[in-house]
Image (cartoon, rainbow, N blue to C red; front, side):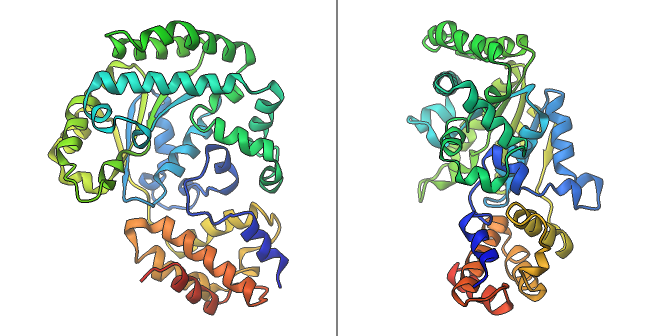
Length: 363
């Protein structure tokens, strides 16, 4: 049995879940390095938009890697940028938060306060370890074995910038959040409070970026007609973003193009719209290779995967399943590796890839 394949499996390099921000340096292959057209260099373009404090939409189907792309860009922007995550799917009063600007602002302030105060409980040494892992000063495999780092990653998933800013600056922000911000959550003008929070962050020589990475949650409500809620979000909530005075990145599902309210908001309130590029076979191999090298730095991907196995997954999953292209591809790769391990093989062959396709339940 190939120990090399077992290590790929044990380290979950083909996870079909969104990459944590700190994992992206280890596992994410930037499209800007593998595409041929400048307008497909999405990381570079996104970075340019956010660095100017402008508003960006990343638009594609679910499971295509929108969140992983944004996480990579946020990490690449460096510690001077301070992402504030808003996750609609975690809101308790989903309908109110998604349609009422004041309720949206209240929830954003409440969650920001809670997440910043989580960081306060972490030691300076723990924060430094997180910074080292994010910067690849600690290897991916070493990070996987570190249980403390695992806990830190889950704690910092909202505001990772606090791990890499100076301790004094982080302390000042935490003090502000504990005192002034706590009071403003219950005031009437919560929208102004968010603008003030952004100014407080900026006064510490950090640049705030509001990140909405799960707006496709509107589409996950079963048979309920969510069109009125989607319309309310883009008509009532999105216009107030321009009052925050910070960069904005919003991940949107491709089907929102069918909504006139989305098309109008996109035109009025956003400076750039990007989609995830579809790469050729050579680029696809580089995506796989990036993940392999997180565990086996000196082993070529062709030593672990037969070319026809990768080509089958590329043709039958990556190109054929646009709705959840990257998620399904990672799932099949994961199952193919497992099939090869069970067969005591040293390499993933076409038969293992076919078995992976079956086990993943992808038709």
